[in-house]
Image (cartoon, rainbow, N blue to C red; front, top):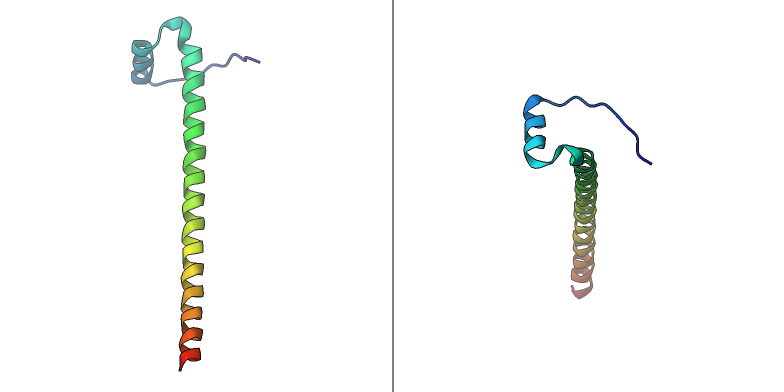
Length: 77
């Protein structure tokens, strides 16, 4: 479904748009630009979540290693 909306752009932004895209193709260009921008936001959010998870698991693994190392040292003494 397609809906018509009115938007306000800075003159500089409109000039950039007019230099890039023919007048009849602006809606499609803006639609694709928004889709791309939202996809990038989702990718960045996912990247940050993966990084936070990796840091959390690395800390957990380091703690487990230290615990096992301490137990192993006790066993060999």
